[in-house]
Length: 76
Image 1 (tube, helix red, strand yellow):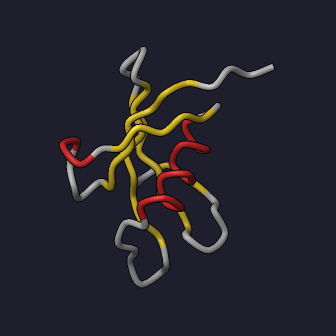
Image 2 (image 1 turned 180 degrees about the horizontal axis):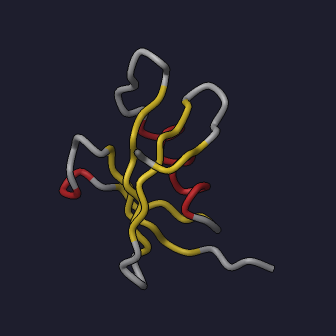
């Protein structure tokens, strides 16, 4: 069983001072949960770039999240 972790997530263009706490099992799940709860501004493709940081380890990843499908991909 995968353990839930706490992440801090923010839209790439907002910076870490606008991050929100999200409890999730994976970085990707945290990114999608952030999109659903805080609805960051999306681009013309219906996507937003979000930064997800594991609170415990400090490891950080950036994802492009499609608002409609919930699909994630690493930021370019």
